[in-house]
Length: 489
Image (tube, rainbow, N blue to C red; front, side, top):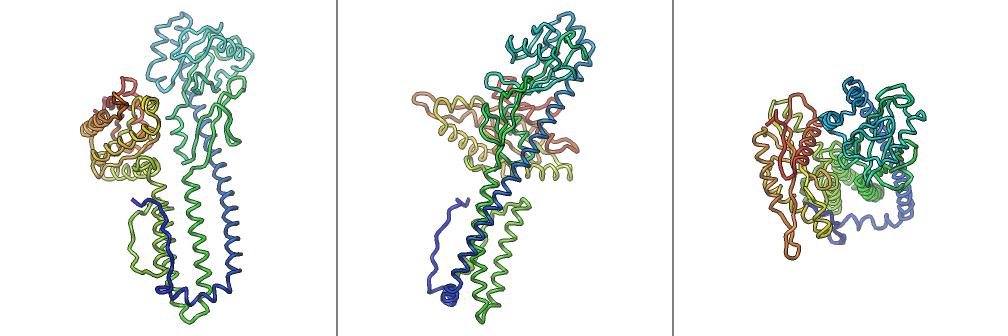
């Protein structure tokens, strides 16, 4: 791989007729060149600020849309549960066993917490309680004051360092006193939730317990008091790409100045043809990147004059940008952006030719233990070892990427469920065998893996969602195992 380094080059009088013939003309146009360069720099700075502002505005609109969509989803699910007549009967009879079975079922599995509160503020049942007794009393007071007039209310809540989106529904809508009580569902805004927010952009989105900058959304409780903030920043890849283009553009401005000087000599037409040819290479390279093709192949330039060297530097800049856009800097495997594009292509191919396709999403178990015992550098080394071990095990046609944090994802073309399970088991055993030395003991981690097999006319988003659900099932069943839907196994 190209390491992104820039090699300094010095032109010599021996192989550069260009410098000899244009030295006098360049001296005459030196003042013009300085002014032109300063103008270019000023234009780029202004353009960079404008693009950064527009990117943040786009991210803010996207985040607002997703948050509102999540609230509507919670409200709709609550509404459907509240229509259950048996629920009302069971609440009146204080049937805790029935409530426990109902609130731990498949319908409420996406929610980290759920519970029923009577009209006195007492909890009839709660799955993973997130409210203290005084919090429940304050919530009931708020609902009785009119906060629950609409029947269903949504707000955010923080408990033990975690942030939740909570929906509360009145078991007897329209009664200010609360009637039989209230039902609540709470979805944890965890790492998986942030991954969902990043689907619409490569911007950085984080949940902070304190307001860090002006570009943040306040997540408020029922009293409209902030409990956390959702901060957004443009992607570093966006900034890196713009800086690379800025450098290329400055070189281009110098190139144009030299062409302008050489038009005064007899062989200007020949130089013009050469400039157009090399400049088209630059345009083609960035057009391919804009289309998402990410060219990384090494082109051969035989010419050793200044035009050939310029073309080589452009090729290196193109390869550097390609690496930034497609490769995870730590593990040197594909990143999420490239993986998602390839998944769309593979799903389209499999659907078109009616071929099997499987997706594996894996997460390292107890990875925090490695960081706590050996430090983050050791944790980074373990991630590198995992990526290396998976790469050596998988086929060349398989596509491996770092999904985020300690998560990895694998596309298995031409692979049915049985073979996908075998591959996943091999990956699990390889990860289990990896360890780092900590004085007299070896510290390592295991992995939980979720598998989804592509269905007819299924889109990639749903395939990812099903694989992620299987991953969570493997976690819930005890970790260090492979999970696949029974109907696919």
